[in-house]
Length: 160
Image 1 (cartoon, rainbow, N blue to C red):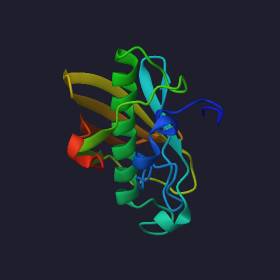
Image 2 (cartoon, rainbow, N blue to C red; image 1 turned 180 degrees about the horizontal axis):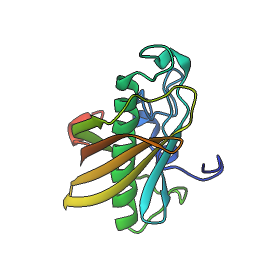
Image 3 (cartoon, rainbow, N blue to C red; image 1 turned 90 degrees about the horizontal axis):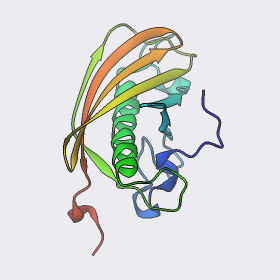
């Protein structure tokens, strides 16, 4: 697991856009997904709270989808930020992405009470659109595969 002192891309999101339930550092009720580079892949870890129970002993699939969604958009942000010559924590606001599509294949029930790890591989498919292929593990158990297509946040999301 990464250390808390490693800067995640979400740590640098502008305050106006740091409220997302999945990755918003300013959302007290959120799950606070943090995405970092590990060599040429992106990584996020999370330990789901018991409130995200599907049936006793297993994590709710919607929680996994939220985790994957924010790992995917964070991964796209990391990739474009790096392409622009920056890394998290250098004082340059990263690009913010939103989800264009999310596809999750649940391979088996996800056990509760263990650390989840999302691993992403990013592919640019357009200057403003990235595809992120994601695998999710519960400890060493491969529980899900996913594809997130993320697009640069439209200017219409900005306050006028």
